[in-house]
Image (cartoon, rainbow, N blue to C red; front, side, top):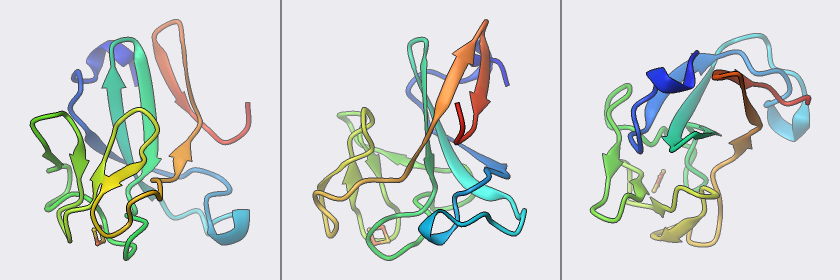
Length: 117
Ligand code: FES
Protein backbone atom coordinates (compact mmCIF):
# COMPACT_ATOMS: atom_id res chain seq x y z
CA UNK A 1 0.00 0.00 0.00
CA UNK A 2 1.37 3.41 -0.95
CA UNK A 3 0.99 6.25 1.51
CA UNK A 4 0.07 8.69 -1.25
CA UNK A 5 -2.84 6.44 -2.24
CA UNK A 6 -4.47 6.93 1.17
CA UNK A 7 -6.93 9.77 1.69
CA UNK A 8 -5.97 12.48 4.16
CA UNK A 9 -7.66 12.34 7.58
CA UNK A 10 -10.28 9.93 6.33
CA UNK A 11 -10.27 6.52 8.01
CA UNK A 12 -10.47 3.50 5.75
CA UNK A 13 -10.91 -0.14 6.57
CA UNK A 14 -8.46 -2.87 5.71
CA UNK A 15 -8.64 -6.59 6.34
CA UNK A 16 -5.18 -8.05 6.85
CA UNK A 17 -3.58 -10.85 8.78
CA UNK A 18 -1.48 -9.30 11.54
CA UNK A 19 0.49 -11.86 13.49
CA UNK A 20 0.07 -11.74 17.24
CA UNK A 21 -3.01 -9.59 17.62
CA UNK A 22 -5.06 -12.29 19.31
CA UNK A 23 -5.99 -12.31 22.96
CA UNK A 24 -3.00 -12.01 25.30
CA UNK A 25 -0.67 -11.58 22.35
CA UNK A 26 -1.25 -15.11 21.10
CA UNK A 27 -1.01 -15.67 17.39
CA UNK A 28 -4.26 -15.63 15.53
CA UNK A 29 -5.61 -18.43 13.43
CA UNK A 30 -4.50 -16.60 10.31
CA UNK A 31 -7.91 -15.07 9.78
CA UNK A 32 -7.77 -11.46 8.61
CA UNK A 33 -8.10 -8.78 11.26
CA UNK A 34 -10.29 -5.75 10.68
CA UNK A 35 -8.10 -2.65 10.77
CA UNK A 36 -8.59 1.09 10.59
CA UNK A 37 -5.97 2.89 8.51
CA UNK A 38 -5.66 6.64 9.01
CA UNK A 39 -3.32 8.99 7.16
CA UNK A 40 -2.36 12.34 8.64
CA UNK A 41 0.13 14.12 6.41
CA UNK A 42 2.95 11.68 5.79
CA UNK A 43 2.13 9.70 8.92
CA UNK A 44 -0.05 6.62 8.92
CA UNK A 45 -1.74 5.19 11.99
CA UNK A 46 -3.38 1.79 12.19
CA UNK A 47 -5.68 0.44 14.87
CA UNK A 48 -7.72 -2.70 15.25
CA UNK A 49 -11.28 -2.00 14.21
CA UNK A 50 -12.52 -3.14 17.60
CA UNK A 51 -14.07 -0.68 20.02
CA UNK A 52 -12.80 -1.04 23.61
CA UNK A 53 -16.35 -0.45 24.90
CA UNK A 54 -18.16 -3.56 23.68
CA UNK A 55 -15.88 -5.02 21.06
CA UNK A 56 -17.90 -3.88 18.08
CA UNK A 57 -16.51 -2.53 14.81
CA UNK A 58 -16.44 1.25 14.71
CA UNK A 59 -17.81 1.61 11.18
CA UNK A 60 -21.57 1.51 10.54
CA UNK A 61 -20.97 -0.40 7.29
CA UNK A 62 -17.66 -1.78 6.04
CA UNK A 63 -15.37 1.21 5.54
CA UNK A 64 -18.05 3.76 6.47
CA UNK A 65 -16.76 5.60 9.54
CA UNK A 66 -18.32 8.46 11.41
CA UNK A 67 -15.99 11.44 11.77
CA UNK A 68 -16.89 14.42 13.96
CA UNK A 69 -16.43 18.06 13.01
CA UNK A 70 -13.23 18.07 15.04
CA UNK A 71 -11.91 15.10 13.08
CA UNK A 72 -12.48 12.61 15.87
CA UNK A 73 -13.43 9.06 15.00
CA UNK A 74 -16.81 8.06 16.42
CA UNK A 75 -17.90 4.50 17.06
CA UNK A 76 -21.18 3.91 15.27
CA UNK A 77 -22.42 1.49 17.95
CA UNK A 78 -22.72 3.74 21.01
CA UNK A 79 -20.88 6.93 20.13
CA UNK A 80 -17.48 6.54 21.79
CA UNK A 81 -15.30 9.32 20.40
CA UNK A 82 -11.61 8.75 19.69
CA UNK A 83 -8.93 11.32 18.97
CA UNK A 84 -6.75 10.31 16.04
CA UNK A 85 -3.25 10.83 17.45
CA UNK A 86 -3.20 7.90 19.87
CA UNK A 87 -6.67 6.46 19.36
CA UNK A 88 -7.73 7.41 22.87
CA UNK A 89 -11.41 7.63 23.70
CA UNK A 90 -12.08 11.21 24.80
CA UNK A 91 -15.85 10.98 25.23
CA UNK A 92 -18.43 8.27 25.57
CA UNK A 93 -18.79 4.95 27.35
CA UNK A 94 -15.10 3.95 27.27
CA UNK A 95 -13.51 7.34 28.00
CA UNK A 96 -9.83 6.94 28.83
CA UNK A 97 -9.45 3.63 27.01
CA UNK A 98 -7.77 3.37 23.63
CA UNK A 99 -8.05 1.57 20.36
CA UNK A 100 -5.36 -1.07 19.99
CA UNK A 101 -2.60 0.44 17.87
CA UNK A 102 -0.82 -1.70 15.32
CA UNK A 103 2.77 -0.66 14.57
CA UNK A 104 3.18 0.80 11.12
CA UNK A 105 6.13 2.25 9.28
CA UNK A 106 6.38 4.12 6.02
CA UNK A 107 9.50 3.26 4.04
CA UNK A 108 10.05 5.02 0.73
CA UNK A 109 6.34 5.71 0.55
CA UNK A 110 5.33 2.10 1.23
CA UNK A 111 3.11 1.47 4.25
CA UNK A 112 4.19 -1.58 6.23
CA UNK A 113 1.98 -2.94 8.97
CA UNK A 114 3.45 -5.42 11.40
CA UNK A 115 4.00 -6.10 15.05
CA UNK A 116 7.72 -6.83 14.79
CA UNK A 117 10.09 -4.04 13.75
S1 FES B 1 -19.03 -0.63 21.03
FE1 FES B 1 -18.20 1.31 20.51
S2 FES B 1 -19.23 2.70 21.79
FE2 FES B 1 -20.04 0.77 22.33
